[in-house]
Image (cartoon, rainbow, N blue to C red; front, top):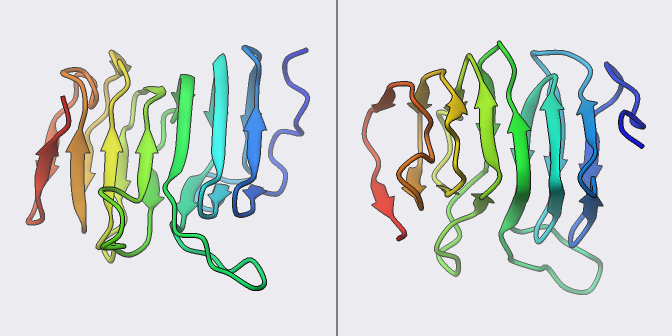
Length: 171
């Protein structure tokens, strides 16, 4: 059943290797447009399963987090469905570059929304976008780090602003 998570409440946090599955259903997460709605640690996966996840807030990820005796270093991923960013620009903070990884955050889900997103200005990480994001009409601002693109429609129909860093293709 859709809409099982409380809207406008605390952020959803996925610890290292954690997993959230929507199984084709629709839901909304996040408490405020200026706070984090989704926090993902190393190897965490959000599998939308063809569903639609609406964000009321930003995304914070880290590709390396301690888990007791060892520290996994693995990409956080958002896959299979639509990640709706809404009408307010979202800040995506994927942390710092991990030389062991080609990219620190992968979003292969389609992006939708009218405001786009901003890559956090202090990032040194690489974020891979490879979804069919024809529903995203807002701008994309690369504030820090690198962007990687894996499809012709990964950034939707808006303008992409790049101020330094690298733009890499994965086709």
